[in-house]
Length: 437
Image: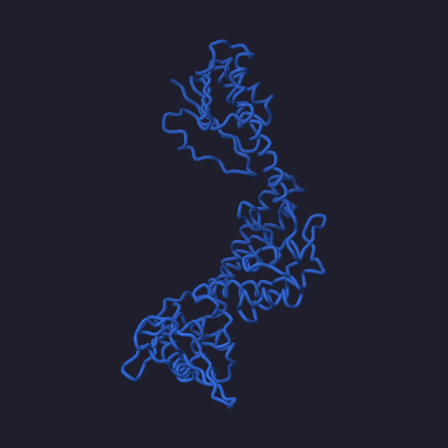
């Protein structure tokens, strides 16, 4: 018994299936990528020496139209080869023993609708794939801040400044809800928080195109957000995920970080003023203490002072004990890979003109290189902006902290500290810093 298998893959849409999918009893596998030369060879060889069974995944792999598929089914049936479609309810052994085309066409009626729908869907996906190769925008309305040009997104002069200020507000205060409220107050532009979050992570605002298959192509149009700002936004979003709700943009630097070690409750910053006096007193008190009597509030300034002292003592030792990779070396390696891919991109037009590559192969290679460059840039953006050991030495100087504003201290605290725990001992207390690394 001779069993053969055939597979067709469009390089724009899919990869070649694993040969193991057919099992171990297959004598030979014919694979086509883009064209159907192997299918023609299969038919010629079956004329000379017919196989007993031909396995395919779907009938659509036999041609690009119903006419082509029907014609090749007739050829296969005429040679006495039993065809089995593994992903469809089709097997030529279920057909009538008659070899006339009419009987075969009658037996295929139940699959015609499915084949037609798949063919239409495939043509649509092929059109989208060709647009991806040319780095054209995906179908649909342009994002807010852009409008559609001939072959790329173009900045909308009336709405792009609105999006730019939204990003600037988030970078300044680290608050998504605050940036959303700012847009509504200044421009009357109402967006939901979820829409604002999508703006912050949307590759289009960074000058990149993102497609439905999840792949990203860099530098396809003018960005609203530069690379450094985008990397900072990503770090802020990751950092804010660790904080309690509504503390991301709190004015006090310790907000959202302090936890009572006695009752495990987060502590908020409370402001107290005395009658007819302008002086303000700040305290840290548990939000939901279950104890009776409740855990006492602690003066904010004392906790802040102790936090700075503890950072100066413990942060250098904590960083020194880490197995931190050489960030400069990692960045240099990623930069080298990006430069190498960009150099190959510049050579593709010459290879096409000289006939080494045809235009379709060159477009496909260029697309893969651009997506690889985007992935490398994403990895580079995820790296810390500076060497931890170098910055740990700088922030271990008490004078560094005294020269900062509360918002600046808030930024540095959240870069290093995951939690500040207050351990109480009778009327005294001690701080325990839990770093993020």
